[in-house]
Structure formats: structure tokens, C-alpha cells
Length: 119
Picture 1 (spheres, rainbow, N blue to C red):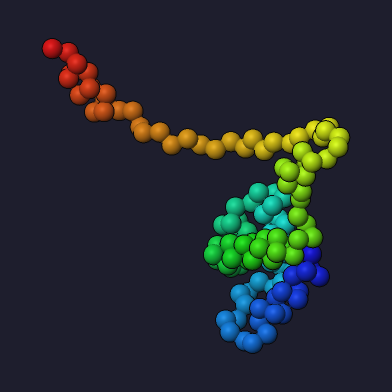
Picture 2 (cartoon, rainbow, N blue to C red):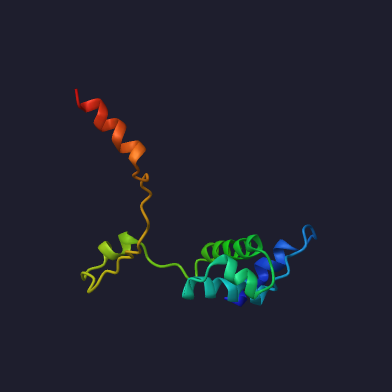
């Protein structure tokens, strides 16, 4: 992965411009791998590397985009699964929980509705 990121980093900073953040290239990759593997929050990673949350976010996004553009770590899509001659033995589905936002129920929101129904 460093072999892919180093030329992209050099090309990005070849003509000067905005200096890189406090994170070295190796640290950017390590932060991204920690974020993917252990699901640490950006605040925790920022505290660990003594920087701010926005630098961590920018580093993760840059590493992800650079690795995606290279194509080495790309997984086959759904069409590749259906185009194969043999059916797949197993299909993995990510079913992570996500909280649902619902309005709070309180007396003020319930009682006026009841009063309007009762004659």
C-alpha cells in the first residue's frame, strides 16, 4: 500500500502548495487501517496522534481515494458474481445497526390530539 501511496503523495506535493499535515505518510496509512479494522472514532485517533479530527478525516479520505483510483485493491462487483459459471458458495451481507430517529413522545404532543377527537 505504501508503494501505491508514495508516488501519489510525491505527485501531490511536487510543485509545493499547501504543506502536508502533521501526519507522515506511514501514519496516514496506519490511521486508515486502524479506522477500518477497529472502528475507532475520529476523536480517539486524533487524540492518539496528537492532532485534530479534521486532519484524521482528510487523511482517511485521501488514502481511500488513492487506493481506489489505483485499482489494485478493488473487489469484483455484483455482475462478476452473476457472470461466473458456478454459483457462489456464500454471499456476505453487511447488516450493521443504525439508530432510527423518532420524535420524542411527551404529554404535550399526545393530549391535544386526544382532546380534538373527543366531542
